[in-house]
Length: 214
Image (tube, rainbow, N blue to C red; front, top):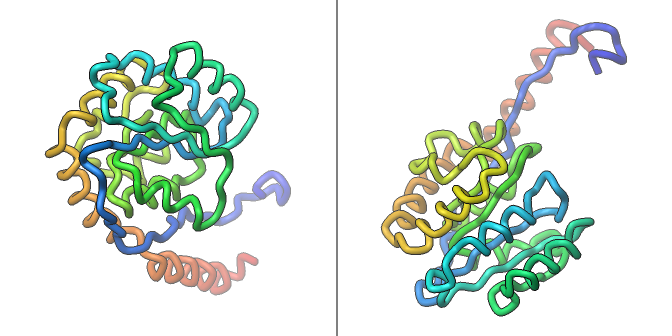
């Protein structure tokens, strides 16, 4: 807009809202790791599969891995799963939109987000809402949406697959860690309410109109 109008346009970052935590009963006998995103390079699905391949098979007992999404890297991801002989662990569910995808988040114990960049991260808030532990890459958006994350080391530098694998291994075996992050999530979501989003949006429009900026 600045380029189109050849002047600085007033702007403000207003976060999405989040609903109250929906903490469904998580399985502790068989943990579920979830990747849910478009299967494109910036979302890191191939990094995720490579990270899983670095985890000792003994650490992956009673683990299920769900990949929800579609995109140009789907075939590469499937071939990579076959190459590392992970077919018994990994299930591809394809693209699932709307409320139907929430059931996959609600049943997940660990949500993996090896995103190199992100628009805002509404899916991350939904994962927190459902009591998931977040493991992935740190990016500019996560610095805000995951502000004061109790275990910031679980968000590794972009592209560092060995550290991503190490963090996944740690989370899989540490029940207390997952519980602590779940409790943090309940408090964190209080900063993201739809009422706050609506109020900030309304106040911003009022500010613009009062200055006759539009």
